[in-house]
Length: 171
Image (cartoon, rainbow, N blue to C red; front, side, top):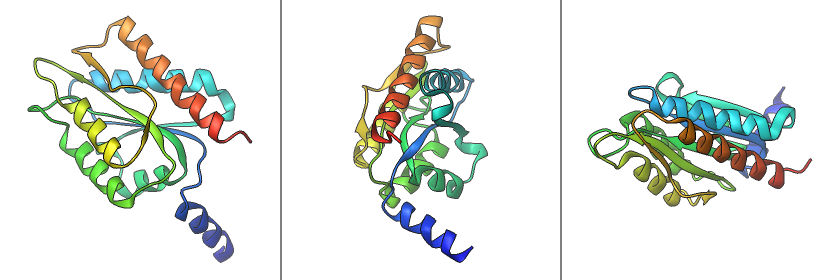
């Protein structure tokens, strides 16, 4: 057991990516949750059984669990709706924690919904830039409840995550 734990620590220390995609989100009226589900669908359709795809609602998951999952993820998406011109507080908390850990070798993108005012998804992207995440696409933002065309864009964005994970982790 001790050797196993030391091996895991060594792998986490360098953030060596494995074939894993994470989709982290917070939601207010379920629109960003719908986007997260479509991103997961796209990643799973592209990666199949060769890829571990996980979705986490940040208010229902501990920061420690999210940080542990992030350490070896090859790609991820982080999403928040706009609340008072900014991102949701729980997502800000998680991203601040992750930024402090400085996870290396990560690629991904920001996403989220907005109503009358913008800001949440864009601010998520600012966190990703500060974390030096390789942005795979511009921020994905949809107005109000996602349309079928918007959900199709989310599925395509999920495929991007999967393609990146499979490319950087060929075996």
